[in-house]
Image (cartoon, rainbow, N blue to C red; front, side, top):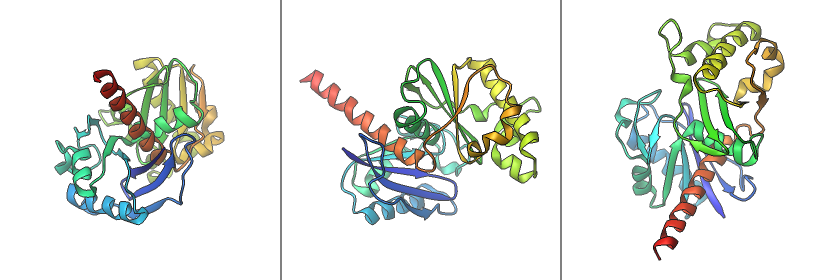
Amino acid sequence: MEILGLDIGGSGIKAAPVNIETGELLAERYRVPTPRPTKPESVAEAVLTLIEHFDWKGPVGCGFPTVVNNGQCMTKSNIHKSWVGVHVDQLLAEKTGLPVTVINDADAAGLAEMTFGAGKGKMGLVVTVTIGTGLGTGVFYNGQLIPNFELGRIYYKNGEIIEYFAADSARKNENLSYKTWGKRFNKFLKHTVRIISPDLFILGGGASKKLDKFENEITVDVPVIVAENKNEAGIIGAAVAAHLKINKEQTVAGNRA
């Protein structure tokens, strides 16, 4: 089965068709700039541009950068306030004429890793962390997604949201060494361990490629490994989410019949 995966980010919206059996992209991913301001109608237009680029006629999966509950945007996070309350799946379906599944973008990246990457077959409580502008987290128990665990949005001791303190953007903005920043990131991991006691951390995002530069600062008594899916994780995971939803709907329909 082939599904188009969409990844809506702060600077760009990326898409590619995905082979749902292997996780491979079936064409080179295509990117358009995220509109400014990032309001619903302008983003929907940008998504339509991507659909038309691939001349896509099938199902679509979409990763969206905030809490998503049954396709509805629940919080502002780092997007425009006009999104709150919008049924993103319905908006995009009406704009494109296609069935669209929408989930949190960090959950999408985690789904890719748990299905085709370093998390495949891993049991227990697994936390995937995408280290970038923020700290996106996906939480899985025995391979099943527990949606919308935005652990990067918890508060640090100074009352500031912890991702402002410990994300890779903080390292860049404050010109921190990997050693100094690594101590900050370790504090985030320690907070997470204290709250939910995971069995495994899987680190993705740009900074994960430099783990050798800060791994000595990580002191949590939980295994930490690097994600295998790179920049395509959000696209792949969004397609996986759409596939899971389609399977669930078919199962429900079959049971009713």
